[in-house]
Image (cartoon, rainbow, N blue to C red; front, side, top):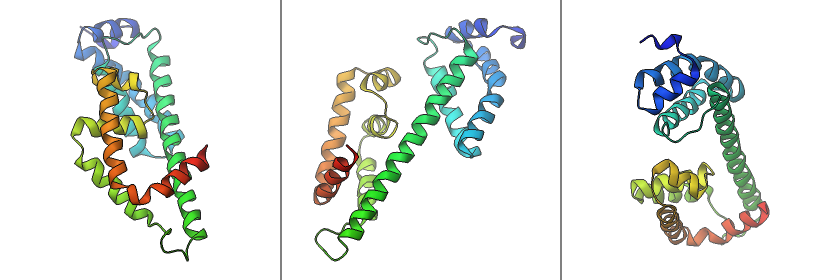
Length: 193
């Protein structure tokens, strides 16, 4: 079959029934224009490639359940949301670092209040590495990719209660490990509200 001659609508139908060649044609047909759009907005080839890899992986994994009426519009819409999520996570991280730095400057002479941000980051990373793989993935999707419980449950094909359990376990371990830094974190959260 000559897939390059098929319409987007037919390619989507074939992909839904696990036709890998139809998926490959969709990838060939849209990758370049999606990449150029992502690269223009992100100013980074690596980041654009990473987002596209996630986009196409998600497209293949959810092929049986996605409702796609306009393939091009659908793909560019998904890319737009991924870019927005990326900038949102950068903004949150920058805002936290700015707040933490301002707190350090205000309390530079108060040894009991001064906090080394690198310590928090190191503890945070160590805790995430201690978590089971699925728990770590759920936490990452929830807190760093800003996905809802329902989106995570759908993406990982697990019940929403299981997603909530993994998030609770992650937060419990983080609270235990970061208890000495909790006052600063609470102040940071209050400053964001």
